[in-house]
Image (cartoon, rainbow, N blue to C red; front, top):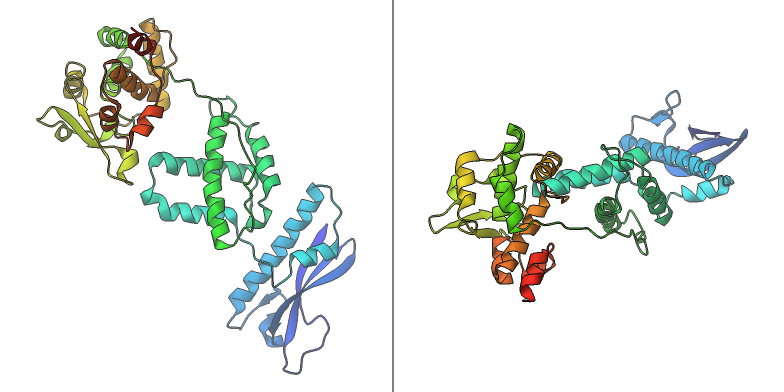
Length: 380
């Protein structure tokens, strides 16, 4: 065990100017050793009962530094004990050297950045950052910049792969990779401030798994359209999802649509949520693409409220089972399906990019899957 205490003028001698030094006394295995803080104060500025500086203009700054050194010393000792390494007093004094020591609470630093940028972030990005903070706090209550290195990243990664989601399933590689993408952003900010000296992510990698994208054909969409669901909940899910299929919209944008977005020229024009804050890119979707069904659905069942993706995914897969379609679909699969059908109908890539609010056709080309029908039709 390491005992830590701040003491004033341990030599019992003041300098010629009447000032004395503050030291931090450590006792390990009943043997004391001292760390020189280089802080000089007058005797009346030291409260020996509480072990703090007072009646001094720099009292707050001095006390903050003293508490930081003491806490860092205990973290250093715990780390040695946890790793079963030998604790050497000289190593601790080097670690706490006044001219070099500067540490920052990484979680507090990151949360500060997140709070400042909140209004500029998409809800999904803000949520992902909160997920990272929760995981880091569950892994280790206090994380300081001096503790961050490649070993920390590796140990944190191993720990994440052993955790489970709220559904009881283990966390996937793609989800963990997305957490580290956010983690890296905050580490980069800390490096720019000088709190972290090296690029701890250099050579660090998480292998993602390939995503299997599933799409519906036009015939399968027709079967869903003509099906009578088994409950009112399934009825709402049916029309909600069909509107996504017929417009190619992101699920995050559907609750923002109003009647004013349906233009007289036959276009559904709206600003896509993820690109609005960056470029103000608008989507222009011809409403006649599926016999005007998007307008009919909105007129009968809109405006649409925001619904959680998990509920939509679960209920829509149940609906597909009722229609006897054996496909594992997600809400984002509607957007992939839209692109696949547009390609099958022969629309050029740059037009599809405009309908999907992509900033370039490169994004559209990489986006989503292509149905078997599209492949067969292209080879005829």
